[in-house]
Length: 201
Ligand code: GAR
Image 1 (cartoon, rainbow, N blue to C red):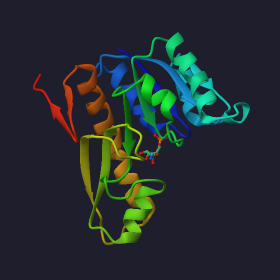
Image 2 (tube, rainbow, N blue to C red):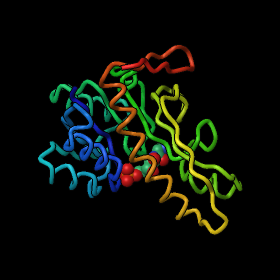
Image 3 (tube, rainbow, N blue to C red):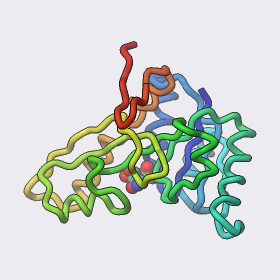
Image 4 (spheres, rainbow, N blue to C red):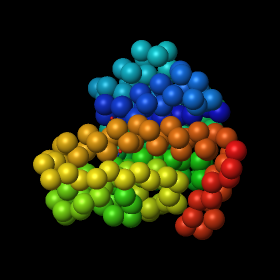
């Protein structure tokens, strides 16, 4: 399966996906990495692995729709069948959502539906939670609101800061995102309303 990865930053989740493919765990191919930030390190990571890496500058487009049409052009050219968001910080618009309905996944660094939006780890830490974590979910029009595929918990320790907590959540992100993508690639996910059923292999 051809996977396109949308990024905005350092790309550690992208790296986890690349590693999972290269070590044979995930039978898929990353056909394009698209960034809305020109100097995102994720682009560098992609190029190091011979993956098509494209910066599309949002400032050159008059609307989200026009921007996403350009993204779509790249994805179609590379025959992308699945989009995964890996630290992509733009909210998706209808152009991508409609073209890839139920074929877009995201990782979020909190146990959704708690702490949607930006700086989720800090939101959780500041709230005083005892258990934090991460979520892989389908993307729909609601912010961080689509059906949940997989979650993993991380215990908050007495001496944690929001940064040490975020680091431990990230370690779990790198595990569950390839696992969830593997389930999608193996056609084992069924969306039933709010729920995602996982079929046995
Ligand atoms: C990750 O923690 C990811 O969960 C988060 O951004 C970080 C990207 O790191 N995404 C969101 O907050 C989306 N709402 P990475 O670029 O190293 O993968």
